[in-house]
Image 1: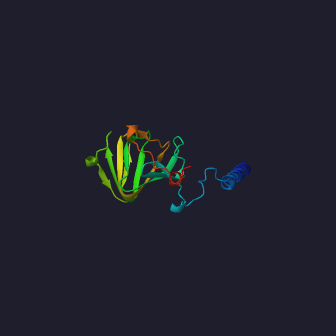
Image 2 (image 1 turned 180 degrees about the vertical axis):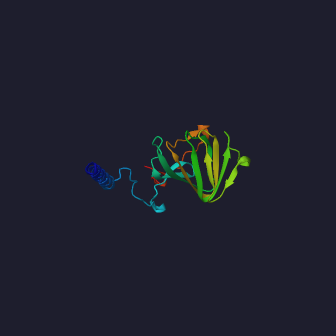
Image 3 (image 1 turned 60 degrees about the horizontal axis):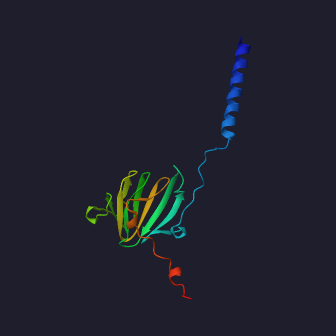
Length: 171
C-alpha cells in the first residue's frame, strides 16, 4: 500500500513539475505591441475642411471596431458644420478653446465652451457642431470607423488650395 502511495505521489509531483515547466517556458502570444512614443513634430496633418487638419496618432481610424486616436487642429474661428458619427466620439481639448453645440444647425448661442483638459463623449449618431477660438487642437479617440456624416453637405467648406498649387505660374 505504501509503495502504491509513494508511486502515486511521485507521478503527481512529476506531472506538476512538467506542467509548471510547460507553462513558464511558453512565450506569451497576447503580448502587447512595443511601446511607441509619437512626437508632435512627426504627425502627418491632412486638410479636412477649411481651417482644420487631421493627423492619425494611433490605430487605423478606418478599421471596423478597432481602437484609434486622431488629432484635429483648427485655426482661430474655424467652424465645423453639423454632423454625426456612426460610433461614439471621445474628444479631449489639448490646446486652445473648443466650442461645441448639439443639434442639426450651427447656432453659436447654444455652444458650450471647452478649455484645455476638458473632455466630452458624443454618443453615436448625436448631431453636433463645433468652432475654435485661437489655434485649437483636440484629440479624438474611439472604435472605428471614424466617419463624418454631414447633416447639410452644402455647408462644408473644402480646405484651402495648397500653397504650391496657388503659386503656379500661368503659362
